[in-house]
Length: 394
Image (cartoon, rainbow, N blue to C red; front, side, top):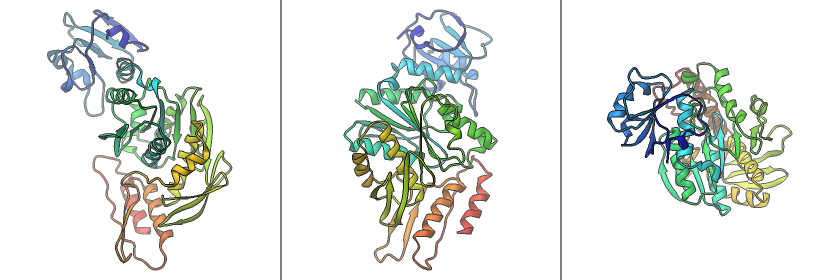
């Protein structure tokens, strides 16, 4: 592929050298470069790619894409100055891998809690409906039935487009992916064609990165603002910011709810260790998942199915037998039912509150609840004491 083809839709300031050169690959990590690759110098939180331009050329890069010009430009190297390196990398990757998102129905799921479960439910649902599907999630990625380990909630733009291309080549018709606030802010999903977007909820998280809650909300909203008119946007009407997310989107707007009027309306009838019994749009169904938070996840998945024109009875039939994602309210019961061990990813105060509130509702008497809370290092410190407080309350 020629450089000029990869630069389609990239906002450029200047070009030094030829755009008719043939390129062999695209990298934002100088350590992975091979001869004939394009190196895009992206500014990151830990390092600035501009510092590695000379190293990139030594390793065989034939094209350098940057925001700030290097002091010395070498002969036989093409230099492209762009407005935004991260955004340029995303568009270039999409072009290099032949616009893979255009070939499939790509659904993005965003929100603080519930992303992994909703995306996983959708992958399992559409697989059960007979489609070959892809999944990009925090827990694991799937290319059809092949499992690929996950390293990030949303991969970097180059890796993301490479994986989407692999999914298209494998015959995937639908791809369900988590879209993190980091991914939106860092332009990792720029240039992708989404057929739909789902909003779960928004609570206290990632303030080590976004600094303020208002900024966190603004970044999440950007995902919906960027959806095309041909797409759909589904939001949680019971979340305080659910309607805010849809304010400026061009996509078709849809709401789901347990507490107010909505297009996709649910009501919990029973909630115990055998699962949920609930109505969805007046249809009563028994689900294997437990807890109010999973009732919302099921409503979101049902809404996507309807927006993608699947039969409502088939959607509910398939959802009724599905399990969620690993590490999301997984539980083990001892032989005499004296001990129940529950494992959940709950990484925010609200997520922990939901889990503990669900456990409280499942208690039949005076059973003792022992809570062990863990917090990963190098992340938002402000939520840790709040999570400890929540654990103590229950």
